[in-house]
Amino acid sequence: MAFTNFMATTSMALFYLLLLLIPSSNCADLDSHHDHEVPKSDVDLLEFPLNLEYFEAELFLYASLGYGLDKVAPNLTLGGPSPVGARAANLGPLIKDIILQFAYQEVGHLKAIKKTVKGFPRPLLNLSADSFAQVVDKAFGYALKPPFDPYANELNFLLASYLVPYVGLTGYVGANAKLQGSVSKRLVAGLLGVESGQDAVIRALLYERAHKKVEPYEIIVAEFTNRFSELRDRLGHDGLKDEGLVVPRHLGAEGKIEGNVLAGDVYSVAYDRTPEEILRIVYGSGDAGVPGGFYPKGGDGGIARSYLRSV
Ligand SMILES: *[C@@H]1O[C@H](CO)[C@@H](O)[C@H](O)[C@H]1NC(C)=O
Ligand SMILES: *[C@@H]1O[C@H](CO)[C@@H](O)[C@H](O)[C@H]1NC(C)=O
Image 1 (tube, rainbow, N blue to C red):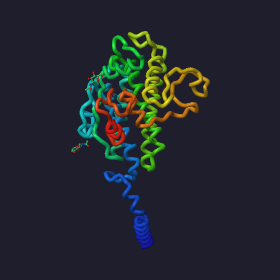
Image 2 (image 1 turned 90 degrees about the vertical axis):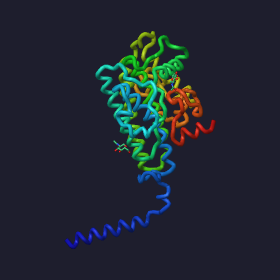
Image 3 (image 1 turned 180 degrees about the vertical axis):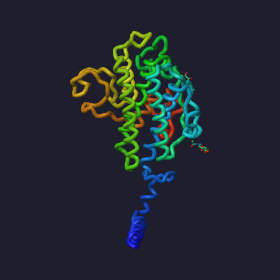
Image 4 (image 1 turned 90 degrees about the horizontal axis):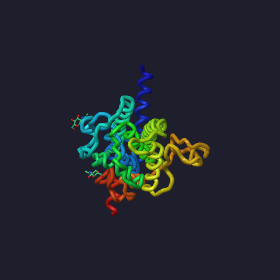
């Protein structure tokens, strides 16, 4: 008993000694809103992906349930405006089940980020069918007739979903290299893991249907994905970072295969994108200072706002 007490006293003494030894400047660098060890330089990088996570959460919640964060987790919106034009998609039981899982995963991601940094309110999101149709028309270089409707059926919704987690994935790969703190790196690696998983599921489901025609257009699924990937590369202005489901052989893994169920560079390592490239893509404008597309008023957080101010 006396020995245990002695051990306890010694451990307490050591603990206080260690506290004294931690330089106070370390504490000053930490995000003041949260007591996690997040260096100031990491805060903007961790908040930026909230823009995409809000988008994904709302799209997947509405598609599978017919309502979004306002009903499922209103506190997470921090009072930001409700999305415009989102609605339930016409999905069969399997795809609906998968999309609902993705939706709740995104709710978890919003919580995980906000547990670590303060974050910002949900930005205005334009998830209307027209908003997606504009992206599709831009990808093809002409107006599809009738306009593409992401909510009309399962295949269309999977194609619309092809547009989403991959952008987050490349952003997390890009952010990771710039993070300083271990808590930040752990969080981003964990978010990256699940975003890549979502992208892989969507791509695999579409790959099964790669040669199927997307009705009523005379265009197959693989062609849609190639056009979407080319558009993202065009808007991102930083070379090849995106690949459709069927590629010229030299772009496939090891330059040996045309099937491309997952996108990757010459070593099959995931591509990275900067926040600026991501904003150019999701605004549909090719310019991080010119909001539009899915974000009529632009994104939020230090990084997105810094580009909006600079115009
Ligand atoms: C949401 O916020 C309100 C007001 O701050 C609070 O009373 C409530 O407990 C919160 N709900 C959840 C689920 O966090
Ligand atoms: C949403 O996007 C469509 C297509 O670009 C546009 O017609 C509509 O005005 C937009 N709504 C808002 C609120 O920005």
